[in-house]
Amino acid sequence: GAVVSQHPSRVICKSGTSVKIECRSLDFQATTMFWYRQFPKQSLMLMATSNEGSKATYEQGVEKDKFLINHASLTLSTLTVTSAHPEDSSFYICSARGAPPGGDTQYFGPGTRLTVL
Amino acid sequence: ILNVEQSPQSLHVQEGDSTNFTCSFPSSNFYALHWYRWETAKSPEALFVMTLNGDEKKKGRISATLNTKEGYSYLYIKGSQPEDSATYLCAFDGSGNTGKLIFGQGTTLQVKP
Image: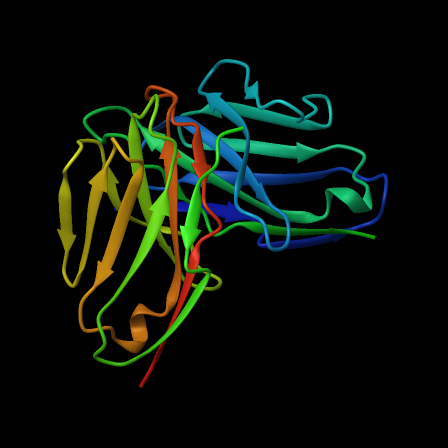
């Protein structure tokens, strides 16, 4: 149980285009989803937290107009990187957490490697 | 800035060896400490969520201890097997159950047959 999928696993796009990444909880209802990114040789860094049906909360330094997050249902959250630039190239990974008694465990997707040319 | 440090950065052991790694985290505002195992091209797998000082948790040959007063957790693997090869991540939650995790850089374990 507790499987999270993420799509696509890899995407290459041109500078200036927008890219959408989907994160789905397959066998549980995710009341909260989290988006992280990881630059080479660095740790996973939290970008934003989204609760179903409400606006995402962004971490300091993360531009909310650039990284649009939608959590429209209890099983799906999307991250859209708008007007992507080469410096947005990174590994993006989501996690999902269900309502109690599921506890505090976050279940992760396999991640998306974004390369912006 | 809250810092989570893991050591060593990488580790090579022979099959059958036991090994352990360290995660250091802030000793204030502690809510939980998470351990994950991350194999290449797969999703990070949740191992433990630890919340109580002095807690010890076990899953098969893997166990973890927690000291919140001094801000460290140890992960032990007994009798390492090649399939244990992975990166082990710890993550500190000092946000009071909002789930905002601060990750360490991980310890990459390679177990040679």
